[in-house]
Image 1 (tube, rainbow, N blue to C red):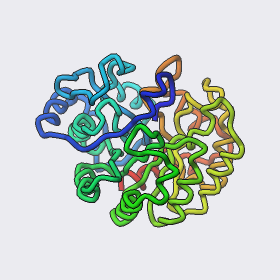
Image 2 (image 1 turned 60 degrees about the horizontal axis):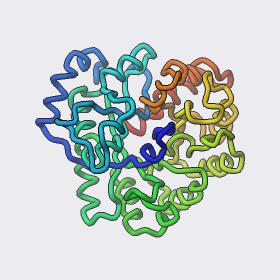
Image 3 (image 1 turned 90 degrees about the vertical axis):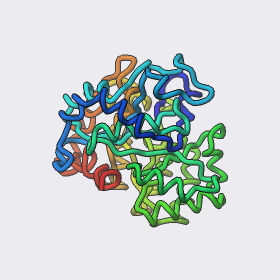
Length: 325
């Protein structure tokens, strides 16, 4: 999740399925030259970016959800073509797309991007865990290529207050269904919400969990040691993973982001590289002077304690196991 300016906008990522064949065809036509380039779907080479948002200025074909206007789209456009211009030079060939809040419950654009670029994208969706047709919706989204469901810690979304997640019947149904189907639950939470996700992991240890952006530890400008300890205690659940991501928004919030290395080391010491995955959180990583290269370079080039095998896990294999298997 994006953690820069206009925070109220960036804290409401949710959506529902709504893709159409016509929409997919429209995007396929616009990306045909890109999809041919990218990667052979049968040859899983190159790094994986585990967290990216895409959207288009074509709001006639892909209308924005209620409450959103084109002025809310910052930057005005971040299409797959624009993404590839950043990730290809860095050796990234596959990407996990996270539904953009501008579209709310309509997944049309993300699904069209996935259809136009087979083998390149996987997807994570938000879903109303209190809906009567939750199981059917999860099946529908999974059949469209979604490999995870994002939980949102904001009370103004269907995610609600994390304090209520632990006892919510719909949340229990979502976690059980995800475990049965081998899908991931991806909590986007604040540091104070870690205990509630910990409690859910305890109740549903078979569910694959991917905590976004270090649970936002460091957004305040300081790496809060108590919160980091709480996050690391979740390593006792073997199916729980952490995204080492959104470097632009954490700690000093300045490249080369080396102030985040102690946090990465502590998380790696507890979870192991096999349960960590790098992600850029584009397009927000490539704004305000930040670059894609600086994000991936922190893991690839600047951390001496990571072996070549460790980097292979963090930059590719963990995300491949969770989102592309």
